[in-house]
Image (cartoon, rainbow, N blue to C red; front, side):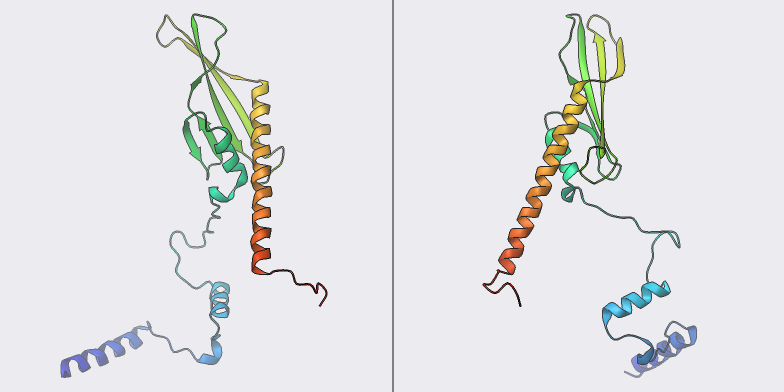
Amino acid sequence: MKKLTLLLITTSLIMTACGIYKHSPVKDNPVNVKDRVAKNIEEGRGIRFGKKGAAGGVFDFASSNELWRASIDVLDFVPFTNASYSGGIIITDWFSGNSKAENEKRMLKITVRFLTNEIRADALKVNIHEKICKLNTLNDCDINKISSNLENEIKLAILKKAALLEKNKFKKNAEEYRKEKPVTGDLIN
């Protein structure tokens, strides 16, 4: 028991001597947790990992972004080679398209780039690449970016789906709000 008491006293003396423990009067520190957090943030205190002074990232989740969800839904007929929400891009795998010639195999690849999270006409860019390979020769393929009506049709389908998803989200939120706070007969208080 004497050894434990001696150890505690020694530890507390070492901690106060090293400056690990710093006396702080109650009058200088807010009692409310939110106020204390705000004060610490203003003073730059807290635990930080990584580079000093580096700003933290903004974390959006794909499930809350209607444009992303709509793009995944519209392009669900083909597998993806890259679907990076943080990179703002979806790239499909090559898939077969209709060939104009019998001795050729035509494949398409769709790339969707997100320019903003807002649902508007300039929010995304759709590119289509075409790969035409000769059937009789090995590795004889031409790859070109093509401009077609399909780009605009895919873009329009994504925007329509995203608008519907957003509309349903607002409708669902309004219904939940009305359940929590029902409207009484007296609208003016």
